[in-house]
Every structure is written in structure tokens, then in C-alpha cells.
Image 1 (tube, one colour):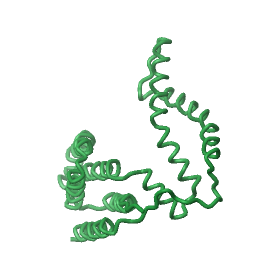
Image 2 (cartoon, rainbow, N blue to C red):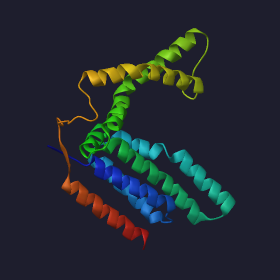
Image 3 (cartoon, rainbow, N blue to C red):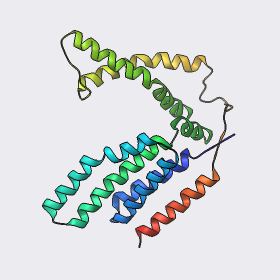
Image 4 (cartoon, one colour):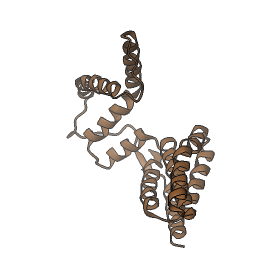
Amino acid sequence: MKSTNSLTISLLILILTLEISFSQSIMLNICIIASALVYLLINKKWRGIILMIVLPIIPAIGSFWSIYLHGNNLEQAFLLFSRTFAFAAMGMTFAFGVDLEELLLYLEQKKISPNFIYGILVVIHAMPEITQEVKSIQESSKMRGKSLHFWSPMLYLKVIVVALSWRDSYTEAMFSRGFDENGNRRAENKFYLNRLGAVTALCLFIGFNVILFL
């Protein structure tokens, strides 16, 4: 048995994302940013902290500047500025605070379709091969005198074609290891929700909503 906070964090982030999309509270955005920063600091996710600060700078400044220049509404400009950073903060919390494999296996225990769960797991575990395939396609294109940059649609089209060619191999591998959607499965590691994490998330949710309606 292993405790997990993956589902708790994911649900909290999902709900807060919906709330700040429609709220007009700058203070709520600031509190979410501060909470995410504290969480990443406690877990020593330094890369997540850097990305949380760096990634939203240009879109945040762009949103602020466009509203300030054309709308003459400083409060609305600050709202969009802080909201951009709040979205980035929650994104980094999810990226660095949630173990996707753990989350998916927990959902499988809760009777979510095994085909769906293991399909996503295949994609997650295939990412190193996909990354290597992207590099190989770029190198082979250079040998033909063409450069395929990361924004090139042709690059992704070729990767999709290659990934489709792997489909049968992955399906065969899954069934060869005894995968059966309708069969009874015994989980190697059983997960349960961490009560402390769930209580903390509930307290944060209540606190954020109190701030929202102040």
C-alpha cells in the first residue's frame, strides 16, 4: 500500500483553474501563486520555480500592456497579469508535483477503463523513443539539405506516421504480457489517498474561496 496525493493535487488544480478563469480577484491569483511557490520550495523543485517565473513573463506583460494601453483599466490589466502567473504556477505544480503514472494507476484501481489508462501509459513510456525519433528525422532531413525546426508541421506529421507504425508492436507487447481488459487484475502496488494531503487541499480550497468572495 502506498499513499498518494496525485489525485488530490490534480482535482484542486482543475477546480482552481476553472475558478480563476472567471474570477475578478487579484488577491486570489496572488495567493495561488504564493501557495504554488511554497509547495515547490518545500519539495525543492528548483526547475519548476524557475519555469514558473520565466515562462509567463512575455504573455503576462503582453496582456498587461494591451489592456493598459487600449482599455485604460489598470485593475483589469493587473488582473490578467496575475492570472497568467497563476496559470503558470498551477501548471508547474502539476508538472513537478504529480506523478502521472501513479495517478493513472490509482484511477485504474477506481475502475477507469484499463484500455484508456494503459494507452496513456504507453505514450508516457514511449516519450524517450519519440524524442529520439524527432532527432533522427531532423538529422536525416539535414542530410537532404532541408532543415526541419520544432515549429515545422512536416516534422510532427512524420513523427505521427512513425508512431502509428509502432501501434501494432505496442499492442502485441501488451497482450504478450497478459493484458486483458475484461480480466481480473491484481495491482502490484495499491494506492490510497493521503488523508493529510486531502485535508490540506480542502483547507486550501476553502481558504481560496473565502478570499474569492471577500
